[in-house]
Image 1 (cartoon, rainbow, N blue to C red):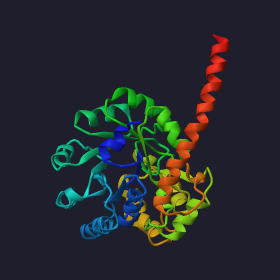
Image 2 (image 1 turned 90 degrees about the vertical axis):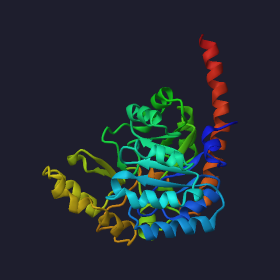
Image 3 (image 1 turned 180 degrees about the horizontal axis):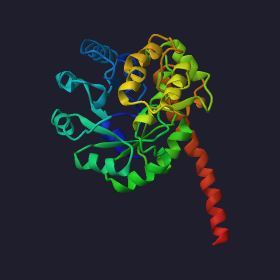
Image 4 (image 1 turned 120 degrees about the vertical axis):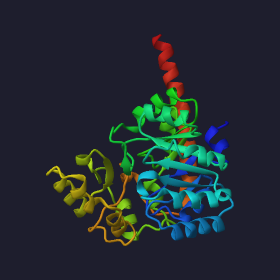
Length: 329
């Protein structure tokens, strides 16, 4: 069957790795692409020199299509980042834009020959992204790890509404870690999926082993949402530091008062340095389904295999439903 996401991105499977602030490194992106998906280098939390290094590592490790993630609000000065991406435009197939208004940047990257994917959390913003020239909508539900829309709309409520509203392909993101989630998203109108947390728990990801092990041993109630007190929503793993933030938020602090707790350095302390009790770590709500740390290439292939198996099993279910419907009409 034809798949518009695969055709636009030149990939085997419609599986995309999220940008992953601080831990979306070049080796991980290459491994995902080698597995048949689209790996992305994350720009958040990186110096320009380190970003160039990760681009070089990724390109030396794969000849498959690569992407890059640009979270607008994570960069105090966008110009050096945009310039670096454009200098390396031949090395990328696509760019995903998140956490800010993508409209000024979409024509820049399209003119450079990149496919533009825009993360949205509502029908309204999906329509605006389409009108601005986006090639793909990444519909991110509130289940996702990291920064989410303050509207707090869930993925399965949004997919059918956004896919009905736009003409371009919709990719589902948030709370997907296995083949069942992929097939469910497709049933609701998605043509691809994006995974973040599942790719943190891989051999190639530069996240600290302490972080990865917490993901493998996490349960269904392992995440909390912080920053609601300032009109934002960030889903993270439970930790003493995250609990401290939540307690402080009960006092209704100002943005300036909360900033020392939520700044990126506290993410790096836990995610990269492994001091997991002294910082916070992004984490999606379906983390309880992650059972192992594997190569990212193997994860992509396993996801594709699981999705295929689930699709086959649902062929039987469709027959059962058809029979029951026929009997009751």
